[in-house]
Image (cartoon, rainbow, N blue to C red; front, side, top):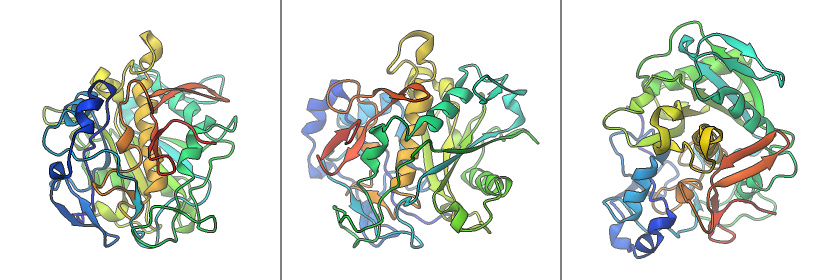
Length: 361
């Protein structure tokens, strides 16, 4: 059984219910437990402690903002968790490895941009996600700069970072480090957290990242094919879209050091509940959920690489949890322009302004 570090199913501030959410009091905050960093954090899903940075469905976020059980105050700044196994944040340029897991993705090809394409990809999400991660850190984009205000090497409980501390790296020239279509077998119909973690280890081996140093700034995004239900995604009891964690939390022994990974299911399978057309209308919005949700998990991985040793608030929320599914006003999800195109993203929390930020100088 994985250790119980802190997670939360976020109390996202959705614009249509912001007024109700703003009236929450500390009495609404659930019972707390000790985190890996020695601080006290809230656990809302004790049955599934590996689901860090859990992206709720749009409906789930609205329900929580309306004051259903499990919602606390929204405006706490983040503080440092003290690190896990000496790791707090991604301090070098972030490297994202995309793993299209399972033969159900169909036949692989490539497009004019050199992106992997897959025949069983109804949304055409595979090349979009590749271009999104290729484009991060280009055009001096400010979305990634919001995350660079966070650091490690400070005392547990700190909410600010001195200039001398190792900060989250900026993905200059793109964050995409590799793409693997693992089609040697079908992906499980309902992969467990341990199977997802093992696939991340398999990916590290595939890419030749066989030392702790080579995985220090890496995230392995495990993209499951349409029609599958990794960790219960898109089942009758599911009210979430994705999560992230690391191998040490899911009973996986990695010979290559700790490995950060994300469970990134096929978002279009849940339609508007996981972001379809959240920013863009028509066919252009079919991939909104992929870049919003996968960007959410990426931003949380680099600020809380081995949860929850990085940056979380008193409720256990990570930087993107606090800003999920905002549709208007400050911090609203919107398109950002990268050298590779325009992509829908959500805002993330900035301690410097104590609010959700879509960009940073």
